[in-house]
Amino acid sequence: MIEKIFLLTISGENKPGMCTQITSVLANNDAEILDIGQAVIHDTLSLGLLVGLSENRDIGKLVNAIENALGDCDIRIKAVEISEQDYSHWVSGRGKPKHVITLIARTLSAKAIADVSKVLANYGLDIYHVTRLTGRIPVDKIPQQTQACVEFIARGEVDSVMSLRTELMSLSSQLGVDLAYQEDNVYRRNRRLIVFDMDSTLIREEVIDELAKEAGVGEQVIAITEAAMRGELDFRQSLRKRVSLLEGLSETVLEKVAARLHLNDGADRLLSQLRQLGFKTAILSGGFDYFGNYLKEKLGIDYVYANKLEIVDGKLTGKVLGEIVDAARKAALLEQLAKEQGLTLQQTIAVGDGANDLKMLGIAGMGVAFHAKPLVRESADYALTNLGLDAILYLMGYSDKD
Picture (cartoon, rainbow, N blue to C red):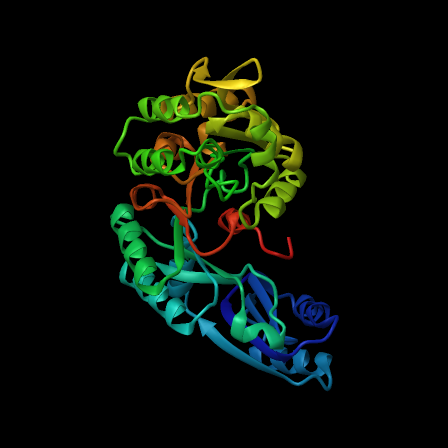
């Protein structure tokens, strides 16, 4: 029967087999392990054990036995008795909601971590786990580190999640980093469908602008495109207006433009990892299916839904065939694909940058505004502005070593 509870903290030089040696001593002394956590940073061990002992067991003798078992290892052991009241408080806390805050930046500063920690403390949240998701940094790369991500997991009740999100968004702007908040629930590692906008999301370019340059109407089309992406023009009307300016353009130009498209940073890595994780992927684009299908082959994407340019006698007519893929259509297609895959919307991810992506971002379990316009960035629950598309893996909780 447990009569006393102690927190053992063991730190120092890490060597193979230490956990076995320590827990063997605990077993020989009939100790109950109530909780355990271990981390190794730069070959330095930090091990915490919450152990329960019967009345006839002496904590001093137990500590000595562990020290003897570890031999000449350079370690330090501290034992602190935990009161029944404190233990009961700890147990009750395990049922509190868990919150995940992901900090993403080109470089990681102590100030950023301190400021995030302060915000969480102000909301009464207890940080109990901090993990670096990005890989180790070679010494010669530290000054110009290209990406950094740290994940905080905290427990506690939050009166206003919206207020917490708003404060983190404000802090994100001040620090020039990305901060994402999410509840730690069953869906986080159980998402299986991701859909992408194409232009300025999967690729850097706006394809219609590239076609317009070939037709000699670049400035006119770019002006309409920018107004539409800012939400100042109805997408359907703006699309028809822009496409009409392409009338007479040779269809051979489509292949020429496709060949010079550039993938956004991280697209290859993200799609490769998603395939390994069993995701279904789709392009839902207000752009054109010719280019969507080009990317489908290049990246191994499963589905493409985009607008179809009418071509007669080898030339664009300036018209779009069929139903236009606008904001409402994108959202409807996301729902359709989720249903076909037997998924709930909570199990989906949507990624986009423009105003016509807002509806699909809003209904997806995770809606990510990627290098987005201000209106979209402020409206989405998740925003990435510093790193490439593969940073979405960090939002999902995956690390570089995963």
